[in-house]
Length: 369
Image (cartoon, rainbow, N blue to C red; front, side):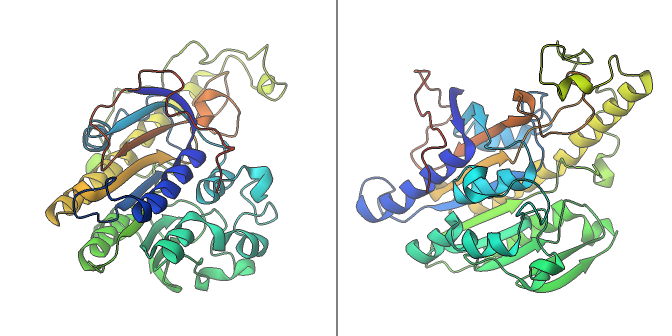
């Protein structure tokens, strides 16, 4: 496994810039037909690495990690959904894209964001400068669809096909913007469970897209974000699993930031039980993500496109479950909240790759678009 420290937004944007440049400048980077590579980005919501968040994702680890490179020291620019997602899309730190929290007032999917940043995201660059087909499905930014920011009729520039979730992660009873038209969903698992809906829409795109252009596909799942609603077939999984009792679990952060020191220590038994229950529910939602990854990889293989496709799997931020006695959340600048999974497979990436030097493949957030 790679142990280099990198910032996800910087690594992702540098990688995509290289794809654009290499596709035009080199005859030797890709396969013999010199086809430009396809790119699939699977972005989860609140998936940690420090608390064992990859444990339920056995198929994902096999199909992406074992088939490519796994980074064990990948960090996000912010431990909060909207600022981090804005960084992933733009390659900028929050103080440069000015998304500071998950509210409209904090520039999350605001009119100002739409005016200054949306036209310059990496999907827009891929579409406008490299002639990529672009497809988005899932959670975009937390305030997407807000009536004061264009509603679901607003389709961000740079996307050929758009399936955006209105506001924050849900599993049932939500609204999607399908190319700017509202599509409401209820609570019928067979047709409404969001992770499965995203999987099916992604498969449809792969089946019916143009074969004469490369594509970029971004699938942004609700899992494992609250309300942690698992698919019916997975609701009995991990019944004996508990939140990890690591050295900083349920202890006072006496030498930490004053905000960390406000947590009540030790937590009550009922609080610990709640944490354990939430931890199990989070893992259960991930089993459907594992299915989604398997379906996408299989469809790419069936269509003969897998060997020419980069697949990137990561998260917008980490999570904590009782560390320093903190309740369930993220937002803190500690490893459990800013360190995330990052796996990449694709052309010229050897399986089970291991970096031999500590600083090899190291990127910082100064490598921006």
